Image (cartoon, rainbow, N blue to C red; front, side, top):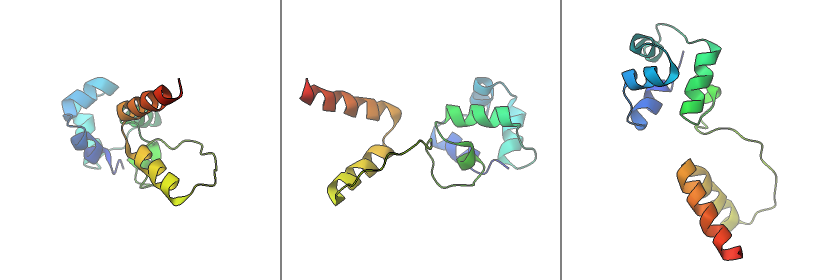
Length: 108
């Protein structure tokens, strides 16, 4: 069951046909994945997760974390720093890149 596929696809404003072409399956397969009629193989799940920059666990509903789960280094953060980290984690990849450029410009 690909619990969050339709949510991700509609959130990213992409049709079933477009997604099918991107990951190399048929539009009918995407429809069946979304309507719980068939389950994709692991390679297809990985392609979907990579395309949507999420995890297989999120796709199948095993976590509510909708972004790629990465190794986290522990730091002692104050409240303000923790809030900034939470905001940063919600940014798109493009937005994170822009923030990095801005931050680096202050230290050059």
